[in-house]
Length: 130
Image 1 (cartoon, rainbow, N blue to C red):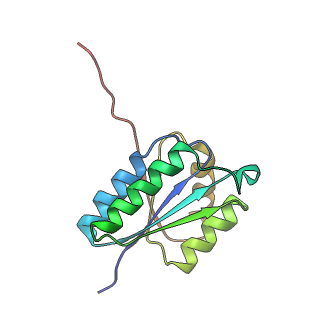
Image 2 (image 1 turned 45 degrees about the horizontal axis):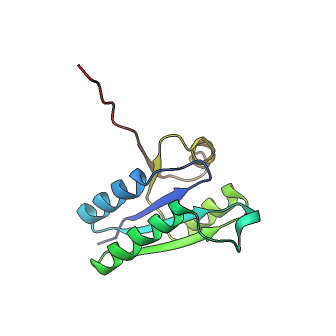
């Protein structure tokens, strides 16, 4: 039985953790491995972690403590190349992206032409007041 591998990329424009929550819930149902890749600006490669990066790491640590298989990667190279490398090396089956990260969406859309992969885009819930 093959294990599914899920990738959750965080680009510079992703300010929420919804995609990671969704990926963890999906991984739990599928008994999948989760790979998180966090893209940093080259300027901040050695700088302090952003609040989003800290929150992401806390979620990764918590998931690992609860028995989930999760790995966290930091990248600052060319977005498309870094994504393609991790997709191929880790045999990624599913990518979960957050709505609003247009840079990641654009690169994933281009990559989909070269690799066979399922993409899940997590959207914000619409809340309407009556």
